[in-house]
Amino acid sequence: MQLGRINKLTINRITPPGAYLHDFKGDEVLLPKKYLDPPEDFQVGAAVDVFVFKDSQNRIVSTTENPHLLLGTVAFLKVVQVNMYGAFVDWGLDKNLFVPFKEQAQKMEEGNSYLVTLRYDNQTDRLFGSSKIAKILEPCREELAETEVKCLVWHATDLGTKVVVNQRYEGLIFKNQVNRILRTGDEIICFVQKVREDGKLDLQLDPLGLEKYDHAYSTLLKLLQERKELFLHDKSSPEEINNEIGMSKKLFKQTVGKLLKKKLIEMTEESIRLK
Image: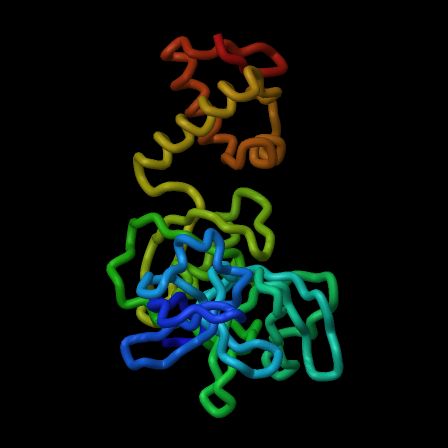
């Protein structure tokens, strides 16, 4: 069984403290009684998916609860306590995750949230958190050009906004491609322009090629169906349009023209609305 991962284990025996699960090697771990609900699902011989970690007394235990991150993944977590050794973040389990000072990319403060990854220390056989995200990212060797990817906003740089791509790679959205406010921890969809020689990715927020116009068309139509009216028009500033619907003024006007041609909307001096 592996610390920090979801393991499929088999119930070996039931005791007052809970169920003891074992893996194919015969190694055992306790699943505390409070997780044996409903009881009929936890009989000897049943297979159970559990997260394996260590409790505050350094004992290996398991839980049927799903933490906010697994080994080698990244999540945006809130600091709930800071002491002389480091910070503790809420990762969805009863026991908070410890982030030592040496593993903090910047000094963590109680009440603030940061991108954190889950790592394993071979020497102490313990899991720990780290906000030094770059350590776990790898060069991309996949053919991802012109594909859609899931991203987690990391931080702003002079060139643009860095993101974690598919929980594995480092990506950059250049400043001229950022058409809306991006905050650390935001989960967004991006489109890969290019995989660079160093394995990092150049990204953009808008779909590529003709898909860009199809996406804008469906986005604007959906907004109008939800709100019935949008207070945007030909004279609206690029900033107003971008803040309201996340489009450039040029793309907005092209999309409005398409909707007008299909007679789906009508335009006034102050707004556009569904017919």
